[in-house]
Amino acid sequence: NAGVTQTPKFRVLKTGQSMTLLCAQDMNHEYMYWYRQDPGMGLRLIHYSVGEGTTAKGEVPDGYNVSRLKKQNFLLGLESAAPSQTSVYFCASTLDARRVETQYFGPGTRLLVL
Amino acid sequence: GDSVTQMEGPVTLSEEAFLTINCTYTATGYPSLFWYVQYPGEGLQLLLKATKADDKGSNKGFEATYRKETTSFHLEKGSVQVSDSAVYFCALNIAQKLVFGQGTRLTINP
Image 1 (cartoon, each protein chain N blue to C red):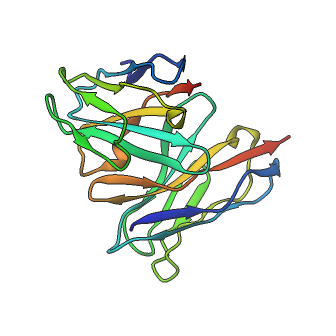
Image 2: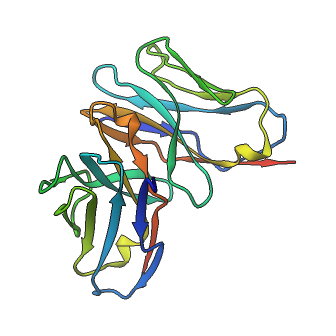
């Protein structure tokens, strides 16, 4: 099992550019999450999905869109990147949302927006 | 709203020193509490947890006790090693979602 993988590992964007971050899991998990990690602020939930074809907003959803067309993939899109979106993005997945501590985290994507 | 506050970092200690990382929380009800560890270049991993008042979570020599009266969940280890160098996050579970503290970077020098 590869677990949770994220692509790319690192990216530099100019303000206004768009990009998609890919999260993939091979554990047949229903629930998937996107977080951002900023210095001094811990991880904050951007969007999440409770199953294929579903998405929901988290704590900081503005400026991001997500899609879950396949159960194993959860995509995070930035339509028009802003410097405030410079961050490290983590994806996570779990089989049982009632046991949040069972979330498996990916290694992260570092994004720099100039 | 529900929140978690950790002690400011970074924290630098010598090998075999005693470690305490403070964590306090604000929440309605009685959430489960967790400590996560993030090693360089990796995602977060669950270190330990406690689900109710007075529970003690423990793993890899680390311990934390759920103190309802002080709304705290401080992380302790009696003798740290260089391999413990990482970022540590305190977190709680609200409505099946994790709320994280800001993280504390720990560096252990040989």
